[in-house]
Structures are given as C-alpha cells and as structure tokens.
Length: 413
Image 1 (spheres, rainbow, N blue to C red):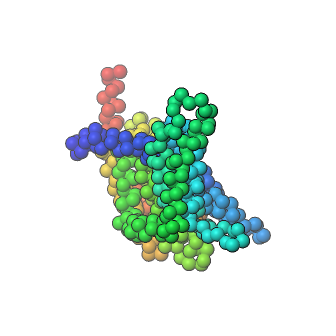
Image 2: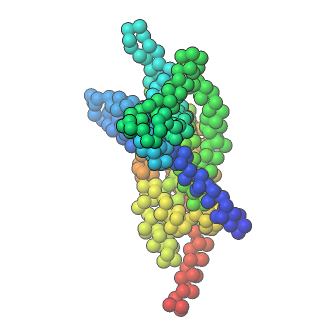
Image 3: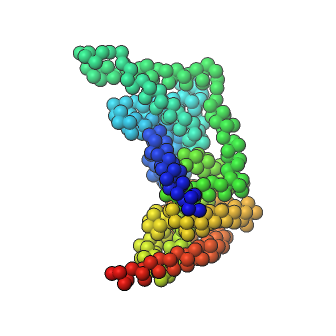
C-alpha cells in the first residue's frame, strides 16, 4: 500500500494535474463552467414550474429553458476557441476565433433554406445534443487559427494601420475553416451530427449500463481521493449526462417512461453524491462525535458546506486525499452506492429523474424529493444508512489515531 501511495503521489497525481492544466483541456473545462449559469436557469425553471400544479393559469415558462439550456451548443462553439486564445494570451484574435466557431457550428447544423428566404434549423441540435459537435468545432477552429497566428501578408515595418493588417491576416484561417464546412455540408451532403451520434452511441450505451454507471462514479471518486479534481473528466461526463436528461425530459413530456439512469440528476442531485462526490456527508457527521479535537473541529467547520454538497474542505482538510484510512471507505461507497441506486431505478421501484435539475448545491433530500418524490426519499434513506455504516469503522480507527497524537503532544507542550 505504501508503494502504491508513493507512486500515486509522486507520479500519477502530478501528471494528471499537469494534463488538466493543459491549455486545451483547461479551455474546454472553462467553456463548460461559463455555461453553467445558463444550465442552472433550466433547473430554476423546473423548480418554478412545479407551482403550476398549485396555481391555475400559470404561464408556460418552457421558452426560457429553450433559450438558455436549449442553446448550450451555440455557447460552447463560441466559448471554446475564445478560451483557448485567452489562455494563450492572444487577445486580438479571441473574439474573431469565437465568432468563427459559432459560424462553423451554425453551418454544420445543416439548415434548410426555403425559396421564400426562410431558414429552418432543427432546434434540438442547438442544445445538449449538439454539445460534442460544438466542442469539436471549437477545438478545430482554435487549432487552425492558432497555427496561423504567426502568419502575415505584411512585413513588420508596414505603414498600414494595425487593424487593416489584422483583418487581412484573419482572412486565410477563417476562409479555410468555413470552406471546410461548406465542402462537408453543401458538396458532400455530409451530416456530421449523424456521424457523431453513431460514434458515441456505444459509449452512451455503456454509460447507461450498470457497469458504466458504477465506473463513471468510481473513476471520479478515485481521482478525487488522490487530490485530483474530477473536473478533468467533465467534458466526457457532461457530453453524456446532459443529452441523457434531455432525452428523459422529452420522453416524460410525451407520457413515456424515462430510460437514462446515468445523468447529473442521479449522481449529484438525487442519491449518489451525498454531500458531494464520494458520499462524504456521513463522514462529516461522524466527525461531530469524534473524540479527537482536530476531527471534531473539522466536522464543525465542514458540516454546512457538506449539506450543500461542497466537500472540498473535508477532502483536503480531514484529509481524505492521500489518506489510506479514509480513501478506502470512499472507494467502497463509490462502488456500492451507485449499484444500489442503479438497481432500484432500473427495477422501477423509484422513478428515474426526468427533470433538468443542475442545482447541485441544493441540499440532499430536498433535491431528491423534487426529482422523485417520497419513494426517492426512501431510497435516499437506504443509501445514507449504507454509507454511514461503511464510514463508521474507518472513522473510529482514524479518530483513535488522531486522539493518540493529541495525547502524546500534551506533555511536550
């Protein structure tokens, strides 16, 4: 175990952290982070729409969701190349890069032009279903424009105004990018959306299986236990979660049963992420009863954030990260909890969430009830019982260890 911990601390974690700080990966993460408020709007509308059951004649607020969460692909196509250029400190070309990404994305939506001058888009392609396409578009645009950054038609000592020079220098990469889109759509009649759906279908299928559901959770828990932020896999997770909950919402609107279990709502708003990734809220509660002054203080300091599913303070403060005594139960919960949740939802004992609910900071219990009602609360109670039991023996060992340290320090003082 000591050798594994040393290798993870000295080799694995630093390399993963270096990967996440790479400009390209960091830009994708940042682009997604910027869009979160628009995603949250969809969640807030879900909350407000519940009032329709109690307020007759309440207006339909769905268009607000459509023009926020439903335009996610557009936002990503602009923000990804923009963020790449910003992080590379190429501020002169970040806006034109974003605009080019947006332009290519709209072209790849394959709109239909009518004889009367109208343009028809498939609305769902603007949103979560277009997220992967938007990311690929954003990266492609950033790569091309970045490659042409040092290219110029003019000498450095030219007398032409700088903005004129920039205009002409931007023409080549933009022309190449849009010509590429024109060839794909209007010459080859190539539907990139259909290709991406086909390529990602196996991944989506696996992710919605029991093994995939457990694996998705455990990978994030494993990385987190070694101090690596799970944001490193955010692009992969969101590309599956967001389209999955969108499909569930559509099925529910048609009176059909939702089918996708692996969604953000299941992970963080319903049952699996009790107190945050790794189900750490029960550990924090156990800390409140610790004999060790250190752990008792940590429990008091982290209980409020944990109630709102913010567990960085306990992950790095207890610490859980790089602490074998607490890492092991976190891994166990990272496997057992999703198994219980998946089987319960798959058997139909509790309703699969079909509401867009990205408000991860909503206290566990309230969010669970809003998503699945009283049956969802019963499942949460079972999950909490299991997680409390798993944490307890490891908490006791760690508490005794820290208590002995504190007792040995008293004579020295």
